[in-house]
Every structure is written in C-alpha cells, then in structure tokens.
Length: 170
Image 1: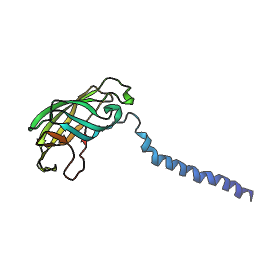
Image 2: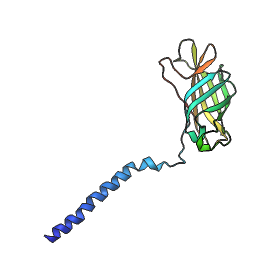
Image 3: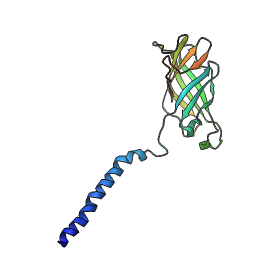
Image 4: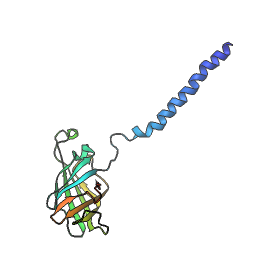
C-alpha cells in the first residue's frame, strides 16, 4: 500500500509539470519579439491640404510621437515616377523625452489609381515606394504605401467613399 502512495505522489508532478511547461511554450512567441523588434510605422489618418499635408494617429509612438509635424514638399497632384518627401515626426512624445524631431525620407512613385474609391469630386492617389533614409531612431525601414483622396478644392484625406480609412504604411 505504501508503494502505491509513493507512485501516486510522484505521478502528480509528472503530469502537472509538462502541462504547465507546454502552456509557457505555446505562449512563448508573444514575448519573444522583444523591444527591438522591427515594427512598421502605420498612420491611421492622412489629412490637410495639397500644400500642407500631415500623417496622424501614427505608431509606434517611440518613432513617430503619434503624428508628423511637417511633410515637404507639397503633396503631388501629377503622376511622377520619382517623388521624394521628408516627414518630420513629433518630438514631444514621452518616449523621446522631448528630444529633437526625427525625420524619414521616402522615395515613391505618385500615381492616380484606376479604381477611384474616393468620394465624388475627389481623385484617389497612391504613393508607393520605399524609405530612403532616417534621422529617427529606431529607424523606419521598408516599403511605403500611402493612399489619399484629393478634392477639387485641394483638401486631402484618406477617407474613402464608404467612410472607411486607408492607413498609410511605412
């Protein structure tokens, strides 16, 4: 009878320990990415006018500060193969502790899209290309895709006909 108790006493940890460890292994990838993971920049809102446009609701905040404070030059309203723009990010995010504003330079092609999903009276434009350089750290890397609707009055938005937004991705 005593050997049965000893076996039962050892069997309990033999079953529980693997179950607990398998739970940790399954959830492992969630915390395996770490702080230095490469995250693309995504901005929910493209806004402003052709002469003064901006990206807003951007993340991650450690790079963008939440939004751009300046984008130069003006938004292109003619098709171009090699359009270059410099985006100045908000320096006032707590993660940056009020440091200097970082910039990201993009090189894109500016094209009118064939399927215009913008509201009546607006034309849909696509800026597609890549990040050329950065002064912001951590650096923005990768492809660029920005959709914008330009109205006849020059207003800029990424709100489509059906009301949904097309986020800008860098």
